[in-house]
Image (cartoon, rainbow, N blue to C red; front, side, top):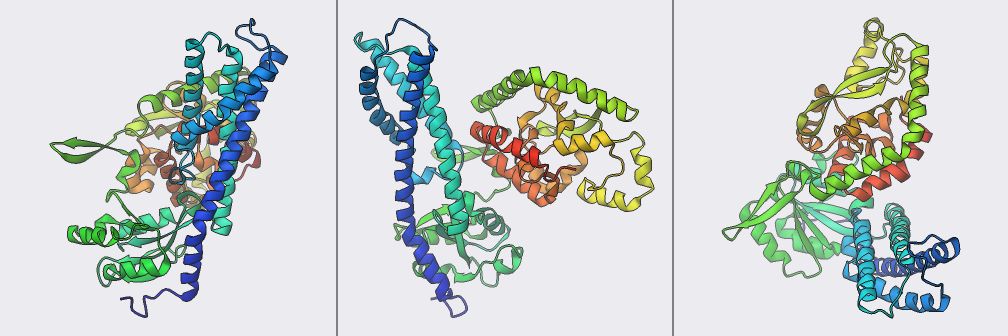
Length: 501
């Protein structure tokens, strides 16, 4: 039984029950909006493809005559079939929505499957003649429009999560050790996790997770393991998150036996190696025993190929603009102050391998002498690795930093395979200690020219915030996340200049 000290306040109980009861309605409405949005985007894609093929004249084979009636009939067949394939790819499964960016990948794969099915049907029936240009453009436009609409709906849902508690599931943390703290701090970011942590239960008497958490997180104690079923019923909990290192084997088994009787409650076990699991794991069965192995690199195989292809294509497309810009900046740097145009900074790459990251020089060459005359600035630099008002920066250098143009030479590092356009923040060997146990995870991917750290505030962020953003990127990496950061978030962040100094 819950003691009076562990009983949740009545307003908390009411809010938890309202939260739980409203979730099914919110999810149904969201799925309905997704279906309508997908149907509209597909219809738009088919229409624009028809206009491009038969009105503009973009064609692969010009021997297919336009026929509005024929293509209207075709769209009437394709539209429900396309949506059905989306359903098979679980694009309307709330368990896979509003989490990572894999939703975009599945939408693209589903559209590709639909296109391939249409191609197979056209090959098998000679009467089924479709303009190949229309079909190819329909595939590309459908993938783009559907992903664009889902991007808008996702971010609308994230706003509702933050401000109205929509699409949020009430949850309880089991355990009160360091792993439980890490889980709370990560999962309380409800716009990403979709969980509202209502409280915690102790695995052992005397532990107080509430006092161990930072002031940003207030979490009530809801008793011990024995009182967990009562707390779950009282708050209408849907998710029980277990810090596995906080419980003994017998406690874990007893907890499973207690929760298996509650079909509406999902029990989730942490890995026990939260810090090391950034790189994901492979599960294999050896002698009927499931065993886990950690990946040494976070991005491998096809993911690595797509990421490399994105880097090279973007640089190739932008080269006509970048080459004159490089020449102009090099001239300005040379005219502004004596010294080399390019500055080399020694940083850590994948696996801890060191390399020189290139930047346009933004400081005077006698910077060490200037800093020696102002020791208080040296202390600030040692603490933050940045100076807000740095007397060593040249006039051109200040402008370059505000616009982030000083980092353009790192495109050479990208071409050399040492960096990527999008990735975690690069660090020097001396900075690795700031990441603590997370430093080994950071070095499983290439550092980026831009990334979550840049679009979220750059130098205005504390070191802890930078570490969290880097770990979030590594854990949730996908090519779609790279596209989102590169194409949607980086330019506004650079134009605002927030945190750039």
